[in-house]
Image (cartoon, rainbow, N blue to C red):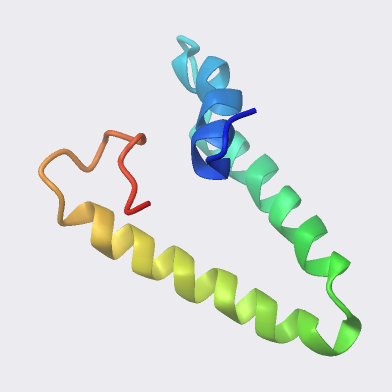
Length: 79
């Protein structure tokens, strides 16, 4: 594992993404399941706000990355 969680996650997903018949919806569903697990680790009173933060961050990242020269390149990051 590196010091960059974003890079580590991409590395773990790489074999699934490179598969000839990569099912992006299924991969996204598994990533979403991990986010749900993470949200449920928060105290009950903080879970809704954390879920709102996740959705807001997702929207912001999609918008930001769609404006970049190669929006299909998953390795780009603002870190």
